[in-house]
Length: 418
Length: 115
Image (cartoon, rainbow over all chains, first blue to last red; front, side):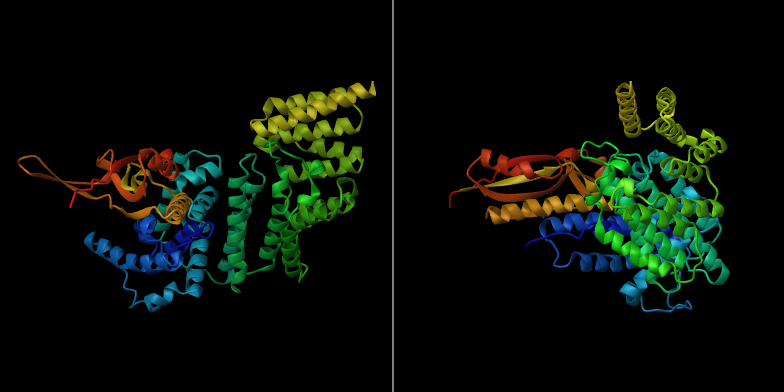
């Protein structure tokens, strides 16, 4: 029999089943639940080697239902408090909880749990990737460029907080709902950025992170309780960025900047999806950070070539963005735009107002922009020494190579001028 | 034609703590392999084994229950295929998916008794 599994079937199914079982047994038993679901996949692989199922999804769901009884027994044996499902106000036939709608509802509850304000931001990200997205701690560590031990610590801290603070497995209401959705957006935005702005050349891991963030964002938008204009703007922004993901790295693993990207490689269906989301996001003219960032990304996509970019429009969006959320990185981006517009005084002022130290590990970006500034002004000596400064603080190998190549072009141009 | 058994040793998925994504990746490779053998018409039978084991040993018939973690080289399963000789089976065994996890394939010919 021909057998092919849907991409990420196991990973996504893990998230679904952990959420459904948590709805049945409660967050207090999360570890037992996760172990049981993991065990299901081991059993599946053993059984399927010789007897591939007709429908892998149905097989896995049935296995998860069987797990319910196993977990009851296990908890009984450990004499832990066992929830009485039938007695709860949410009395529901257990089978109903495995219906598509209810699975989605359980997954949303898990997303909102993961983004609870009592968890730290780092813990929220790790917990989301593990519990909702089915990443192992090793995979999370590799995706976030962190140590596996660190991730394990974050996960156990998150579980502990959820247990000790009695966090409810529910979608909050009213004002709390609004605040929590904002936190969910933030977490999804950060997960996406880990993939999109990451300096790692392993494009596969980056795509997985971006893809996960987009999948979860779609879940939020699908439910009318949790959808919002900001959510649509966030989704639009993800689509616009993701459309360019493939062209950011060449086959040699080298970083390609916006100027040199092959625009014919930009993914049209994603741009289309982003535009649709953007239309829904702008119904009431209340614009968030995500709106402006999406608008900037869209403006770049709209330009048929780098020199046709509407820098004036982009500058306007950046100014709006800066008003809502002033940050060093936004100021730096504005400086880049001013350089493109040849507004050297404005660019210079922005570079004076911003300090490399405000950018933390990305301080090299500051020197890179400063280098660009002097190059455009024709001051090549200064430009090269800025790049040397950038090279002295850059940590990532791919970024370093990018700067080295850039430096070579600076020097070439200097020779040509002489 | 003779029959051979390919015995799979080591690479216990449960003990290795593979993630759902990694398990799915393994699964795809196993599917592809068994499909290839089926298409070639050489696959006779096969089974996967649970990792729990009870061992009885010696004159005293000492009984030990063991979990996979305590057994270094655990047999995880087998396939029986039809082939001309060891070389042909060796060729088939190239597609065994778990060499990178430290897995081993042992090839043994099935003995046929005169009737």
